Image (cartoon, rainbow, N blue to C red; front, side):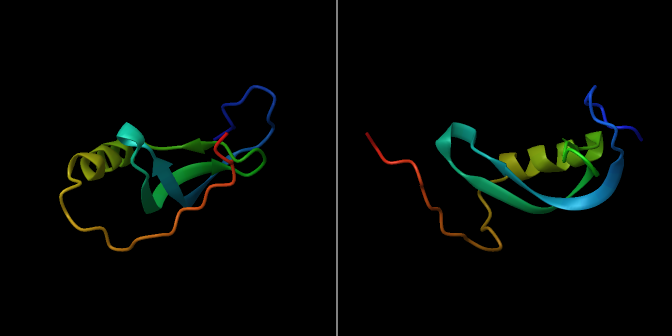
Length: 78
């Protein structure tokens, strides 16, 4: 499938990505998310079933995560 970005000549490959979201300021990382990734510009597309799975994970945040990760900030408070 050709990339959806107008000026990009690339095409999409199936890969697994790490998806980060910040609902309400909380950082959530979802790993091993199936996606279509452009081999030229890196544009990422999720299929509807994958989006539903992501939404389910975000709604079911009462369960324990499988791992935690340190978070670093480069921007200084000013």
